[in-house]
Image (tube, rainbow, N blue to C red; front, side):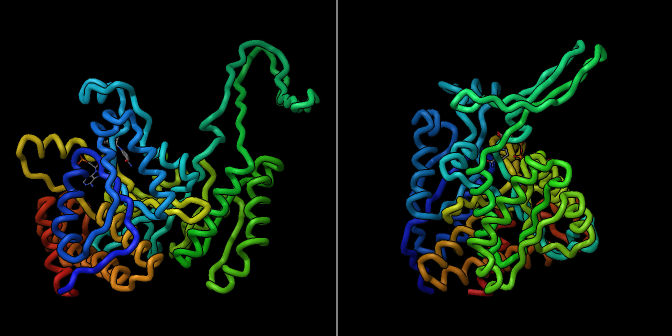
Length: 403
Ligand code: NAP
Ligand code: MG
């Protein structure tokens, strides 16, 4: 068989620990035999980030801007323990945070559904994708603990020195708490555009909920921005694609999601997204089956797995012990990126390859061959638990029946 030829390079961001081991296995077994892989390689492993004073992370994000598509392996976000483990010059920032702020994007997380691992919510037949607005609100707040009586006010002084005041509360000696939060219009606009673009890309309905009846300025601003951008820029495109934008109060959205069959993209304000993404991933079964894609408002895509570097398994691997680490989300990061590259460069064989590989992964698991994390939660009783490498080899065997 001739290998598939790529045109534009795909930005490849390598990473750390067990996922770095899986990364190489996936390339060797599932990609290089079938594709003339054309990647621009950036090593975001912690050692390389430390050696380059984290320049490599910034370079990889800029390359993603230039070429439009990246695939990323999970990386360590350093903490105190990592400082000594890797003898770091500095506690480097989270690479995902750095990349996200350069691309100004929104993260969409989607579970991978297989038969035998059923969501806790019986009527969820299709995956639910969560989009979290990752700026502001309670995540960059200022707070006060109040311990005697007094008046709390919200004061805004504009650049000309004019003051705008709003009473928050008159406290008595019993005291209480106050919190100041903010958001900025351009960030909400980017979030809205990323969500509308991704809904079109995926041909799925977009749902958004906020509490505009109670929060008549703050949450209402989110609602208005989404609605204005939709009317002006997306309404016709949504009609053509046969998809819908649906806004409702956040509590109504939650109630409807529980009763739905899934299949929608759910745009969430920062805190709602933090909470709901954990609920969705645990309800669908496993963090190891969750994909993640960062989409910028101008249509740049970075694909990755939602889980981390699986440190505990890596230490076992270093001791020479066999691991059974799930590579599914990392494989899907590659297929997502390759499919997108194929669509942008008009290479139908590459798009078809991505779909065949995804189907092979799902079929392999549904035939009972899976890693230990899935073996622990499946309701399929005839299963074979495989090691990290044997699972990838089993997927390759299935894939070869399609090629
Ligand atoms: P983690 O790597 O996601 O792993 C937490 C636990 O979840 C594992 O110990 C394992 O449970 C299970 N697990 C996760 N992915 C799995 C997989 N593919 N196959 C099988 N089991 C899996 O989270 P963490 O241990 O909190 O973080 C480790 C490192 O990852 C940290 O340095 C953190 O900074 C980094 N991290 C990176 C990203 C990213 O790059 N996007 C995201 C999150 C965390 P058992 O041990 O019980 O088997
Ligand atoms: Mg959370």
